[in-house]
Length: 279
Image 1 (cartoon, rainbow, N blue to C red):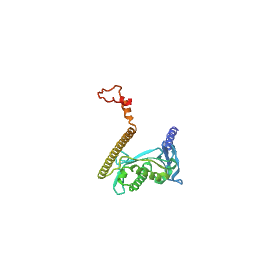
Image 2: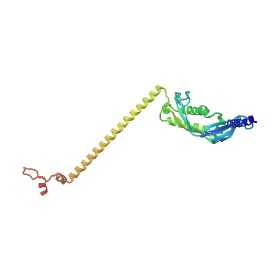
Image 3: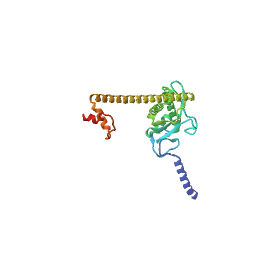
């Protein structure tokens, strides 16, 4: 009987191991989607699974999608995103070839996660590498084709990306993939010859603006000088008319400036001011 009694703990351990092996976890920050390969209920469950441990017998798996915000960069660099070149290539309205790196922040709506998996049947990495990248590329190609290279590289650069974000967000909204933000992960890459032309044009425009500013400043200064001169002339004219009608103003001004000392005077005529006042 001893061998049988010794086997009981081993059987219990084996059963416990099998039970654990038949369980899967949904980690914090994720939502689970139960997929059954066999039986009458084969397929993707419409009920999203929250964080926890679930029984997953043979033929049953749980896929996970992140419900927190993730950021992924599609880049030509091997140190960001994939080791492959994932840059986006597109053209302006004249067919000029351009390229750029773009980052995306995204999350999954937990309630719609089963619908997202039913649509694409891939995990989060598969969504990023396939459907999401394709949607961004298609929207970027369509919108960039309506702009010139100077607009894309310059004043409408952010407008272009905002439009792409709106298109992609609208496309994925019914499936629960939230496109929170698209970012330029660097400058739009333009052929060197075209970039030199753009920079030269910008430099010329800035020089022209500077010249216009100098002309405007000189014009304003000249107008100020004219206004000052006109005001001075008007004041002289008014003073002259006042003196003409009232000559005593001259004596009044002289008295105002007199320091109180009589001047040395040798002429036989009347002394200034005094002679006039005596009359």
